[in-house]
Length: 444
Image 1: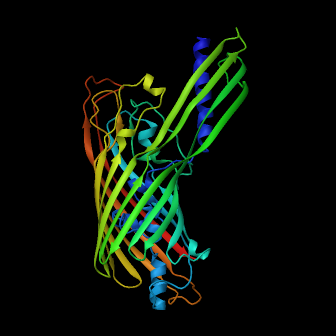
Image 2: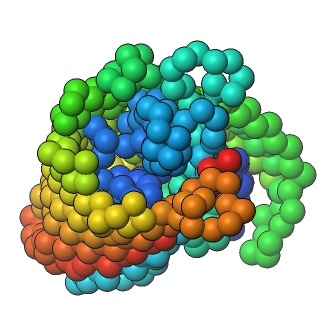
Image 3: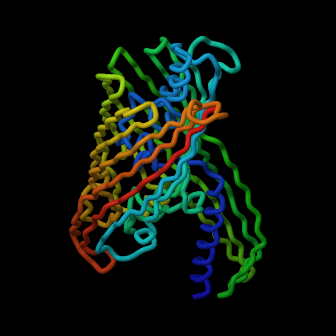
């Protein structure tokens, strides 16, 4: 009895240590994929692979950093030149409120009850012509999306038998950090970009000596070694603009948080028992994504865009140690479609609308796997308010305020098990999500 309690204690203690370790990690998240990285982009249904030109470009298409920003276009228009005479940099911040209303008959759990998806975003684009005039637009940008719940991130490396949502709630509580360089290769025609997805992984060892066997909380004589290494996965992009036609393509590598391995050893004071543990974690997976987009501007005031993305979820694998106890697990590759329109009512006001369709990455699960996802239909709308220096005395550069709202219809699913039990019953799930956000963009 005491030995069993001690083993349980050590497992819990070690897991808490691992959780502490994970707090230093930076992982790619999926807020930008599920909702959007900027109200101006998800107001258009995120169909911006060919058209993006602001500090959110690292999320969608890094090549967009090479384009003139909206403020640069305004200043160039005021000066009567193809591009402004002075160098400006861009900074934006946004906050998006999202409360998924999900219903399910699955057994209740923490993963199903905590589905708040509020998040904050920060973006910066620096024009490097301020250092050396290359006679072409070249910018370095960084974009961060982080949970608005107060958590840095949440590690949720649970068994596939646990009922949890793949892309809502706890699964999203992780930051995204992307950045890179966008360059104008051919003036006002060809743009390319290369960037990074930043993350870190590690391994380590824990030694716990003089561990008493007791039902009470104990403090072992602990030693720990942790080795953390930065990891960079690449992102690439290209955009082409010929007359009223625009095209773009982007590529982003998959990322996942991984701790492999973490060795733990405990030595008890009673009988000198030595217990060795081999543990590994894998969570916060974001798939490899290929995106392609086209745009059309039949007039200066109107922009129409269409995107197609391929998400390679099949590359997801269980952690090395979890494979020992779990049945064969897989996810499906999916193709999503997005369309958006933007209309400039005046120099001050733009309105946007978008629509997208995205299938579920989770296959039918008649066995023991219980991860949950949905086919989605998404409708969005938004507006952009531009305050130019001509409107306010003393204002040196434009300020842009963007608003957006979105609705996701999550198609209901019914899951029937080969052998239904109290812990693994048949269940259904579905729901919808309303979300909205505001951003402020400043130019310096």
